[in-house]
Length: 238
Image (cartoon, rainbow, N blue to C red; front, side, top):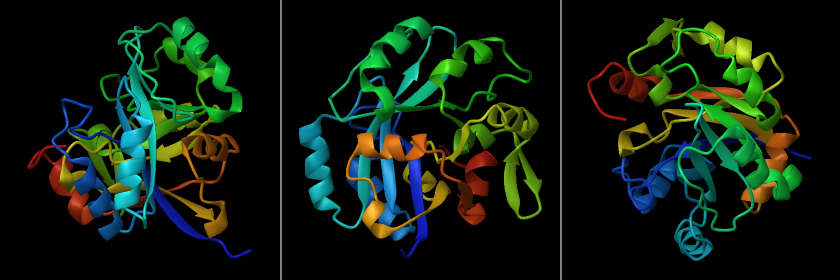
């Protein structure tokens, strides 16, 4: 079986369903293909893309795998990105951990949740991270939002200045995720997750994508530092 590097961005917001974004979905898909990504996941705030809209978008971008999850803001103050079957899910802001666990229970192994930018506003471990452990499968280690205002160079790569906290969380057994958290066109392709995958094993839908990450594949970070630095240095938006 021939394996190749598959680059995926699992945290992208579009202007269709996230009011904070100025990135049109068709634009995001075109730029993702042009900048070497094999797949993107639209993770709108509290809402999953409607299946009908998702199929139209897929038909217009035949060379790109497109998936739909959602980013949930919890009562505990953390944001969790969930990849799960495409069922037009919509959940309210401010869910408790218990309520989220109940909402996700029917999906079993077809749900993959990672905590997004957990130390963007924290400079120490929060006990709620321990309470979240049963729900989490991954941690976002780097993104434009993570780096913005707290980027440190390590060799030729940009790391969050609090990278030891991210490492501590990853060492609890979580899959390491690397994403753009794009809200603007400039962010597409700056940070992505790279895994080795055979072409025939590319997930057909978001449920299959969740199952793939639940297998705990070895992940690597891809950075385009030339495009990333102007965003995180404060000379452009996210």
